Amino acid sequence: MRDDAEKEIAEGAGFDLSLLLPFQITKLSNRLAAQARAILARHDNLSLPQWRIIRVIAMGLSNRSTEIRKSTGIDKSQFSKTVNALVEEGYVVTVPCQEDHRQIELILTGKAIAAYELLAPEFAARQQHLLVALTPAQREMIFPAIHALARAAETIDFIDTPTSED
Amino acid sequence: MRDDAEKEIAEGAGFDLSLLLPFQITKLSNRLAAQARAILARHDNLSLPQWRIIRVIAMGLSNRSTEIRKSTGIDKSQFSKTVNALVEEGYVVTVPCQEDHRQIELILTGKAIAAYELLAPEFAARQQHLLVALTPAQREMIFPAIHALARAAETIDFIDTPTSED
DNA sequence: ACGAAAAGGTTGACATCTCCACCTTTGTCC
DNA sequence: GGACAAAGGTGGAGATGTCAACCTTTTCGT
Image (tube, rainbow over the protein chains, first blue to last red):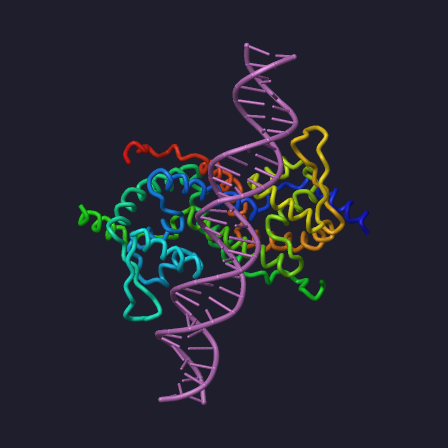
């Protein structure tokens, strides 16, 4: 039993980690986050989620909490805490939302707008830096590929051996 | 000054979040991690970093701590703590490394091998599930694209307005 | 062979993320 | 219109990740 197991494992010895898609994406994501933190650390003391929220608002997509939250992909709990931090640090003021009393509206202060003006060009340059690292063909297909993977990552219904086997 | 800022921001209102590469990759990575956790939660109580370490060892790449650590991309601190947890939970035993006394060798117990046998097929199925979500052309270039981006994410030397401007 | 520098690992402090339980407000369905 | 589910938000607990200081071992220059 254990011998078979060890044999199986030994046979897989040649397998290549670089072919594990989620693993490679995770490492890439971690590096990108570190790069973003490095950019932020040069100027402001904004955290990454703070910056993401400010950017969404500054881009004028919406001022409603739910829409901002969903745009950023941050979960409810962390969003709430991050907004609190932004308010305490003077980047954002909140106003009760008239249309939906559960939500709030977020309004950037001058401090946040100044930070956005300073950081936005750097993040734009970084985006360019990343895009030119790709071939034109890669640039074409990278966004659809990400989207397709994101959809495929939503379920685990591809597993046919359910918990009953445990 | 503030008026110009608001104008600039308003002009950018049409900009599309879906074109922000790091942002999309982050969201994808988060979803993939959640999917992996969902798979792990069905069977074992292994955490994601624990599973990654076990997998690297089980695949026979190496038993040396440094090589395992670098393969997983986990940083020194977290690796140390995760290995301790694996030892305490009986998945791994450690042996002093003869060639380099700073390192240790990690050896999987039967418990870890059993967990690997159980989980590996599910993660293989998941990998397939992800790959078939891509077109053949996307499959061809997704890995080179990830690699190129990972390299481009290593530096921030593309910024020409250094700290002196603060 | 010696000392300095680099690499590996450990630990603690701290930030971030995830999960869950809970409360309030909206929406829905008889 | 009133009960009940659904959506939004808050707060706490615990897991996970990051960063820096520190010690030991190895490597490298001279």
